[in-house]
Image (spheres, one colour):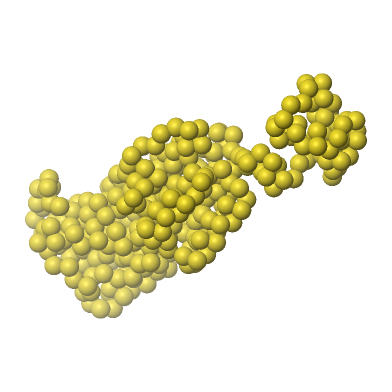
Length: 346
């Protein structure tokens, strides 16, 4: 690879002139620019990215921090691929950095993107608190957006989905279909999404004056294996249930397999609903009912907000999104009389 000095020699100018041409700062005649660009093409010179960032204060890159325990499923595949496509359409590149397994490592990932002089940073936090995220936004000179967390102070800097509300409505639907014994498989409870979905399930039972039975709540870890294990635990305890709500579709798939192995038919004996509406959900037998988060819409909005900040535009005050409950073949009526859907159950 050629160096800047070699380009300068070939163009018959100084190294400083080449630097001014590349950075766009300072006056350089059009004839000299043409000489430099011709020399660059002939020499096959590629400017060092970090050096260019230092010179221009722009990287044309947006950083995204996601913990590695999250981005290996269909939901995060969609989120990351959509973000990359949207940014590419805006003439920018996506830099994905691993937040790993702790708040300290999420902080380190953010600092790494700052050191690379990213034009903006998107954070999909798992461990950082809302107060600390607000503080990061206060202290960062570059645009920062937070995904999947509602912030107290900087409401315009976050994109979030009402996970509690969507879980409430999924549970409510099962109740209105005649189910009273509804089991629930949690996600990893160090995840805000998991805790909100559990809270929504409990709130719906309480709203309908049904008991919250701890024996019907079993832990999961987002994977199919943990969903199957949760069903095995339920069956071993001997607790009865006619419906099951799993905190994501992958656990619901594992649960469906475990129910089948126990000779329990879905939906005739156990109705089943998951979350995330992954691409395979409608192709299962029976087709899996699921709560669909508007992932693409959320990503489009967070990119639009980042670009707006970079262009000096204004932000929308609050960016809340609502999920959609998609009912397929995995849900049937339960053993109790159907009740009218409550308008104001919460």
